[in-house]
Length: 370
Image (tube, rainbow, N blue to C red; front, side):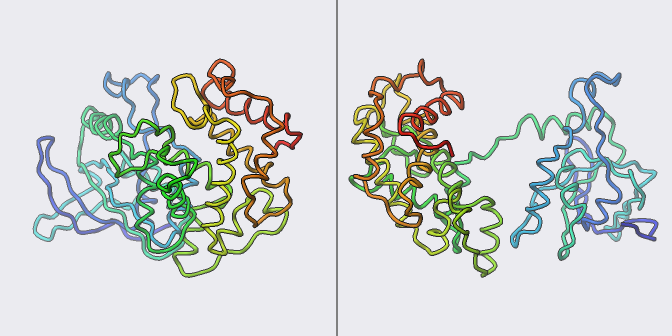
């Protein structure tokens, strides 16, 4: 990616704040890829005290870059927040009369203080025009660079996953995320449901003592049975295209995918209802009550039960059909665990306890680990 122009030129507005003057503009992604660099010096290097303590940028994460490379090709991709750059006055010039900023069109001209993953994710972008809004500091000393970095990265508040899934309710098009969110709300609100008031649904200040699961925990445990790449599926559906059904082999992993593609969300919800109703009948106290030492209706137990759902469902050889409560209950009758067995000593909180319970459920029912 090259350009014969001596400078990258773009309109800017001048902003004055206590730290000093900086500039805000919009730059084509290809120009940013060409002129920017990330100063990845580590804390161990012999630098000034502030830089040594804070560093200037986090190490580039290949996983994060790969995520962004997929994201930028979605139909509604956006980066609404600024990439923050530091340049020298030798390599830049702002004309207040025309509001034009010029930055020398050479590699390693603009240092990235924040946004290296966004820029790296756009390196091979070949879609339509993609500009990024940039904030540019000129002749910013290293201490101020470090403090800006610290302000951005040490004081950020992450958006909860439950909130993110909750927002899919407002989407007009179908998506795996929206379906899973709607099923969570349905099962949480419907009288007689084994999940009645058990899921902490955002936007409802219920304060119900029965709540033992977050919305994100429920959605993430279900969505793996619908989609391997739910952002890609959402993008395809939003573009008005259709998803391809999976074959018999693939459906053993994505047990609810074809039901989702056929708009049979209610049947997915009914299957979950029946499965956990069987759990409730088998371990009434452990599933229905919220106690400090009970793990079955909390994240550890729920994750294990959702993992066990797949081999249990596949054992009936009726993929795409609703399995009733009685059929699921017959599987659980083979398991000799008592309500009191679901404690944190036997199944430690986290993935270790989850896996131990899942394996035990499979072993006691002679079902294969899936």
